[in-house]
Amino acid sequence: METIAVIGAFDTKGTEFEYLRKKIEEYGAGTLMIDVGVLGEPEFCPDVAAAEVAYLSGEKLESLRRQRNRKKANDAMIRGIKALVKKLYKENRIQGAVSMGGGQGTHVAAAAMSVLPAGFPKVILSTVATVPHAQSHFENINDTMVMNSLVDIQGLNYLLRTVIRETAAAIAGLARHAEEPCKTEKEKRIAMSMFGITTPCVSRIQKRLEKSGCEVLVFHTTGMGGRLMEKTIQEGHIDGVVDVTLGEITSDVFGLPGGAGKERLCAAGKKGIPQIVIPGAMDVLNFMPPESMPQAYKDRKYLMHNEDLKVVRTNAEENKILGEETARRLNSSSGKTAVIFPLRGLSSNDQEGKEFYSPEADRELFDAIRTNLKPGIRVIELDCHINDPEFADFIADFMVEEML
Image 1 (tube, rainbow, N blue to C red):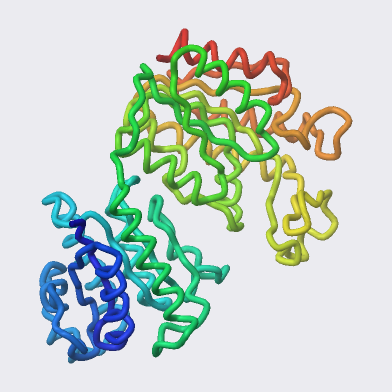
Image 2 (cartoon, rainbow, N blue to C red):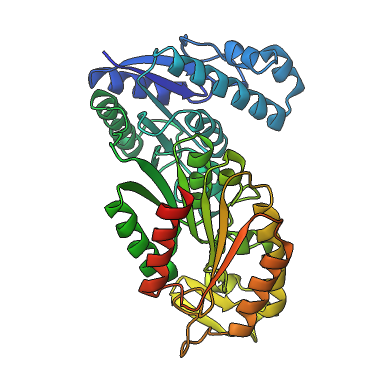
């Protein structure tokens, strides 16, 4: 029988977690009940007490309760649950993990899921699953299934019983049918980054690399996508990188939604694996929703990518800043690194005849990258647009013949 780690605050949500345990067991799985509540005593006897979780963080539960410092207690339980779940996984004592909660409970649950690898069954039932400002809770949770609770997790009612049953069925079924991630016989595994405005380039490179015997993992550069790509590289699953789309760096530098953090564009260099870097999609500033665009940009050239996304063209001054930051991140590279510039445009919006076409602004970006790169990083200029077939073919062939 598969054993599911059930993680939650049993002092305030004991009734709800009792119901979740009952349904999981009805669906044929065992449970390991782990209490992370710090406010009071649990409503039932857990398999792992909150005091044990706190101890793993270096704290005493009694001390946390006396201090009544919500953030300190939350941080301690996060450290403790991560250490515990990692240990349980390594010892093969659990075959799945599930939790439910509000904002605070989701934060702790997501921390627990973050130490579990892709392919391991994990589910969170959350009151903030679809709340825009709370999406940071779900960063780094790999392939965790996140379900919307519909109502607050406070007392059993017909709606909450329904979603708890669905949660129980999901984790029991996932655990029952779990398999090890399928490993192919491909010689090399290549990570690539893509956004809609660089898709033709990425798709053609992908097909050409696959014909050469590589397995290609394409990450959507929405912020979480870039973080996951860097994490996958850090964990040693990638043999080479073709980083076509760097728009997440633009978001980071100018404080816009969709950034991937300061470690974006750094993992491959630190691991010493070969990487080709192309400043694709660095011609746009993304504003989602459109009304989030500050007044300072109101006179700038813009496009509506869709009804929820307004994009503004970067100017020469901004591109200089972006080029300097891109070079700074690449200068920590220890392996083969090449930067390749498509001189005729960086995205489907930035090409001759299109609204964002600006060779002058692009040149400022290219010059800033080249000027600030350390010696040893190769720079290549191609008289192509990023989405031209010949550009993609050159990149794919260069990776196979020169970098791998």
